[in-house]
Image (cartoon, rainbow, N blue to C red):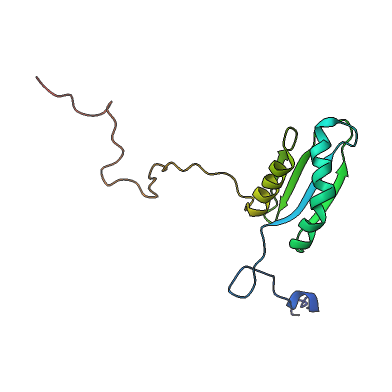
Length: 143
């Protein structure tokens, strides 16, 4: 008796969206603004939200924008990315223009880990022909 064939649903026939020559999927998917309604450190964040949030949402229709109250805490912005990573940036002590720059930084970010720019040592997948050299096993020079 042959094994039963699992049913093929219509939703399985769809292709998954991917970056290419036809479409572009931005790496950021969600921005969450968290602020306190009473603390003075959140005053510039509240000003930014009142004046710039609607234009930010209109310019980025792919982006989910969430505003949450975070009572008795410093204001932050969280960026959630497609690669299941997130970045958190504190907003206390920033002016409205500084907050706009941090939002742009998250919008332009890929969400990947920060990698050092130094070159890494070359690592071989195969063993050397002569083996690993060690100063302990080398012949001692005669004087």
